[in-house]
Amino acid sequence: MIERLTAPVLIVGGGPCGLMLANELGRRGVSAVLIDDKPGTAFNPQANATQARTMEHYRRLGFADEVRRAGLPADYPTDIAYFTRYTAYELARFQLPSAARAAELVKGLSGSWSAAELPHRVSQKFVEAILRRHAEQLAGIQLHYGHRLIGYTVNDDGVAAEVERLSDGARFKICAAFLVGADGPRSLVRQSLGISYGGTTGVQRDFMGGRMLAVYLRSTEFYQRMPHARAWMYVCFNRDRRAFMAAVNGYDEFAFHTQLRPGEDDSAITADDAKAAFQRACGMAVPCEVLSYLTWTAGHALVAESMQCDRVFLGGDAAHLFTPTGGLGYNTAIEDAVNLGWKLASVVKGMSPVALLDSYAAERRPVALRNTDYARRFADSLGLFAAVPEIEDATEAGAEARRVAGAYLGQHARAEFNIPGVTFGGRYDGSPIIVSDGTQPPPDAANVYMPSACPGGRAPHAWLEQGVSLYDRFGFEWTLLRFDGSGVDEDQLREMVRPCADVKVVSLPRALRDLYEADLALIRPDQVVAWRGSASQAGTLPRVMARAAGHGASN
Image (cartoon, rainbow, N blue to C red; front, side, top):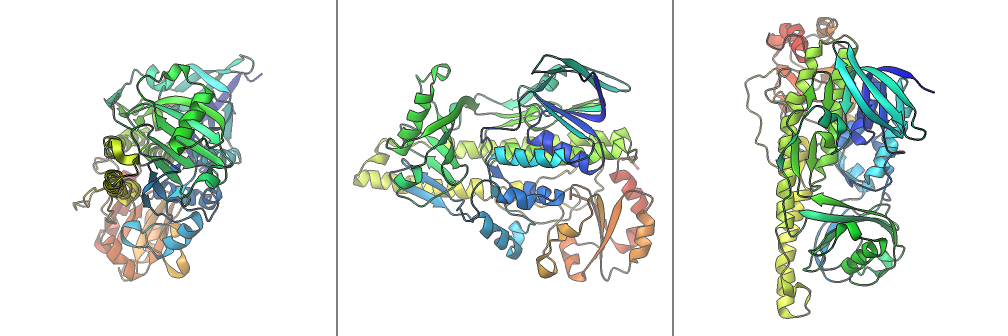
């Protein structure tokens, strides 16, 4: 029987946020114990869209290609298509590339979509399995599914938690310096801190607002019965049964979600009811097997009033709860883990003071507020647009209704699924560990991203010779970019930053200087620009590094 475990970090929650944090810590040689009351990673598909920024982080950790191979076949189209019913009229279609095509396209893109990776459509269940497999391979990382947190205490020395193993009721203690609550919307950790959500909830819409039914199903005949081209996302738009459905494996598995109608009792729904809802959206009795079903509530745009308290931190759904439009919930959770991971590691290793951790909430909470607001707007755009009664009629009035709806839904798809500004534009302006240069960041717009090295945002990306990503040249920890022609000696820079942290100095062609508008740029472990400056400011680098690592942010 395990009586006591000790590690610098205790992670409560084994979903994407907790598993990504375990990978970030383990890659840095920091031990962590992760517990989750579920028996393992997700069975249900859950989130279905991995944004490009998240894929860039998976690339940084070395398994983006593995994620891109998961889920749908490489040549499967990732279109978003709208129908009155799936076997009836097609209203609109927003075409997007397959995984294989995306891997080739990205190397020729610039401007808003200049990135090391493009988005990938893959169910969360596959991503969690990959994250778990890589975390388990890291020395010092212990994953304990089937274990629940009973309670914990915090003192000056750290956190002492009591944990129960669900298989036999055995209890043991875990002692850690820090605790991270990534334990979902009903987070015991958040509740124990007395932290509540703020924002909007209970929003009622014609769709994506109110009670929803999620069905994970298998249908070997769906594609045979569909008279339309395949898609990744199938949206059903009519007066009777509004729904969306994501292809899970590209063959026979689907994640179907529908708005429950007045009079449908969510507590009384059976597997037969779930099957019938799917078939009504299809427009015919397409045979299917219900693998699982559950109800959930759409209409949330919530952010915890605080994301940290002393030695305890919140991330993922414990810190913010989305209506899942734009795929922003899971992707925001991943970036929580990335942000907190390098900071915890730096403190645990003694490279930074504990005060560095205060920057976590200062940086991530404003982004959570921003992202939940974007998701709410996407939900309003789709959910407040209602179908007219004649939309399914084989009449001139029906045809006109379908034309109007198709035009609107096509525009909505471009707004919700082509979002480089949301994906890449989150910023940490005002953070105590960002060294501002007085310049203004570009406007924050959902569908346009303007690459900028203004400190506080994602480092501008470029493709180098032979299709090598600039990000592949970055160090795993800190990177100092030096542009040829700046007049600053590379060896001198190395000596200057050597005492500060693990910094890789990278010299780049002068042509890339225009992208960064500086002679030098300091890139954080999370690929965020911490500082940029001219050659004449090189002498300030030790002070800049100290501030960026949390040593005296007021200096």
